Structures are given as C-alpha cells and as structure tokens.
Image (tube, rainbow, N blue to C red; front, side, top):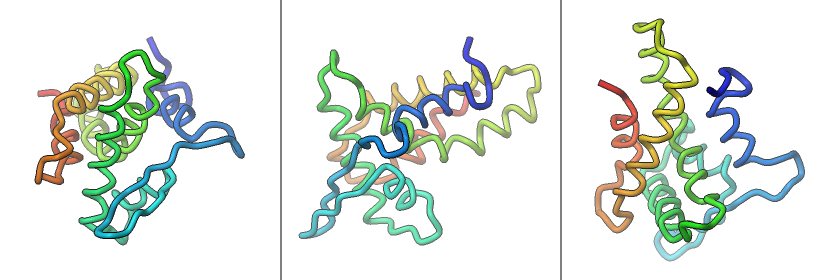
Length: 146
C-alpha cells in the first residue's frame, strides 16, 4: 500500500511529471487556431485550472494531451499517460476530499489509487477528435466512486 501525504500516489505522480529541479520536463505543443503554443506541464495546468481560464485553449490542451498519450506505444515509458493523470489531479481533489470527510474509514492512498485507475480507464475510452471538450469533467465524475 502507498503511504499518504508526500509519499502518496498523487505526490509520486507530481514528482515523476515535474522531475528534479533543473531537469528536463515534457512539454505540450497545442494548436490554437493557426498558432502553435508550447506549454510546460505547469502552464498546461494553469490553463485548465487557473483564474484566467480560456475554454478553447483548455479544450486544446486536453485534446493534445490525450492524443499524445493514446499514441504512446504500450511498452513505452508512459510519460504521456502520466501527464494526463497529473493534469486531472486538481479536478479530482474536491471529490476525493469530500469522500474522505464523509467516509473516514476509506484509506486516502487507496482512494487516490482508484482515482488514478479511473482516469486511466477514461483515457483509454477517450476520443480526442470528439467535439466535446469536457473530458476533464467526465474524468472527475468517473473518478468519484458511488
């Protein structure tokens, strides 16, 4: 079982995506209209959850992240899939904390792990060419156990 807090699933994903300070990080090439924008993971998350959200750019970030993750070979390093999970984590927090408050017997590490599995399952079923840009909302709903 994974420890909670700094050693929890979300923290480990955070470490893997962001890497050591000064290390190389993945970037996302996002097409917005006739422009291509190169975004770091932090910039991508800010587009999705920051105070100045741009719906079109947010949809483009999800579309590109999902497209890249689905193009990864099954025996690859999974960096694209991990980036999608990392991008979804802020959207999961509110629901997971609500569950933890209501059901104190639920282990946080187990809940985080189940949420990650739900995001990965949603990713496998995602269609980045769909005109529905609300993948992140569907992921948050899918990650909430009933």
